[in-house]
Image (tube, rainbow, N blue to C red; front, side):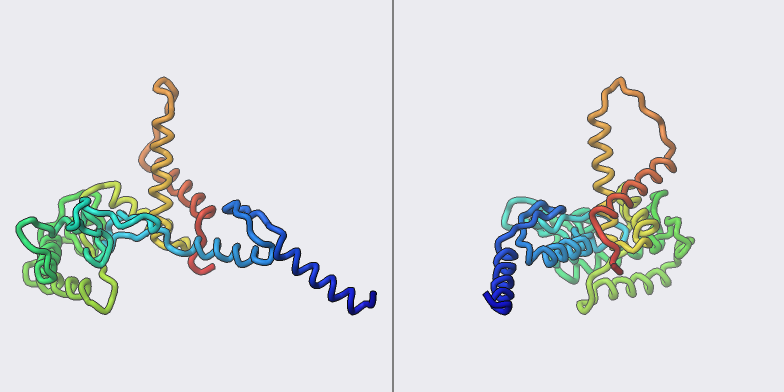
Length: 257
């Protein structure tokens, strides 16, 4: 056998092996052809960057739905509402519920009027929640609106915010107050501590919710007579953030990597 013939035989043999030999992926445990193992690995990297959830378009809300599930519906009827979709301007059921009424058809004009009224109320009266951090609420801890605005100034700012939120050329974004403490705190912790690490806000919210769910399940499994150490709110927050960062390191990648 000549050297050239041997090289051709060796090349064909290697190609055959690459097409036949299967490698086990260490992440998903799928069997992948050896020639495709690098491409398969790149897919996992892309998955870690791609947002895993659809987040409510209200910048102060942490409600979401997983992309792998179907749209959340209000009921099983044909008139059910697809929340977190274009139908509700990207709002979750709770935030969209601020404007929904069985006595009125939810037209664009009616919805716009409701948004305008909601902003005006937040700027002049406030939501009254001590945990509020909405920069467009006079109750908020955020110094942007440190005191109730007068009706004229509030009307102008409310109109500006409404026009910006409902601009058809850009993705809807709202700044409504939320009335559940955990909901508000999850978004606040994500924006203040986790997003600056380079992760998308969607991954950060997913991490916080997952860790909190795991902790609740753990507490439910503990024996009623087991010793529990009382923790201060600050210690609980630090532990939640630490575990969330560990979860992100395993399941996600910073946006710039």
